[in-house]
Image (tube, rainbow, N blue to C red; front, side, top):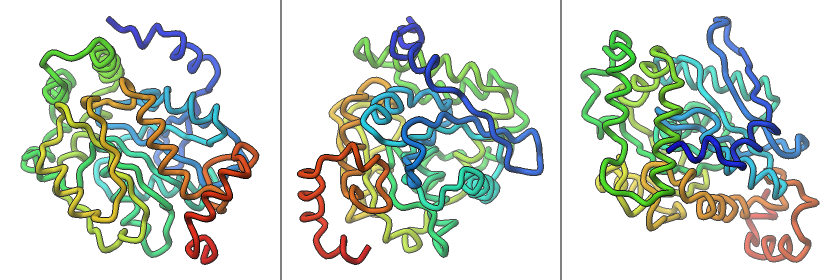
Length: 308
């Protein structure tokens, strides 16, 4: 039990990557927590947004691997926001504070939905250059909880945790997936009542993505073929919404593939980001990209490269 928490990789991550706390709203209680790793000269990094139960460190394996390969990666933990517009406004202020004009977003579950809503929110002055949507959704009505969304703030912590745990895999899973679930349960325990209630509210509040506002953004949809909280209908809806999106399928991985299938997830992330190598929107230090790789990539991009 709790293998990840005592693993050498996790301990190395906690001892080498500092957790920063940033306030960008007038309300001092709204604190963004984040890990920022990799070369600071990169102005279009990859930012990870966690699911309802997640904290910023659930992406520690992506942070360690990708920053080691020369990418700048940031993993976030949200303050308490009660509606999507408020979240988007706060996130925009955070990017302004970090002096980041455009970013790539990797969102897991709720994080993926919020990433889409932020891309939609900033579509007139785009701040999102690309999206990786992992086990995500485009319409909150799939959870059939829109009628309770406005009462989560009243519920005690134990009841909110029970709601979230109900979506975790209960059947037999392999040991690595079991460790990932244990770690996420531990992360869930670290969240306070208002943090959890606000995330569940964002997850279930009646809202959907307007695809025409973000249709020009490169998208990779990452999902799993085994049991997850997402229904087949929700996945199909995502494919319909983004017909030209790249698809990254993992045979197994459950709700948390970034923890239990990190090598595969990291590979798909690299494949997604490869299309931006050699442009000003690259998330990787140019010195870490070989000349041969760059030439191949430029050849693949063809005219679109010249346009940029």
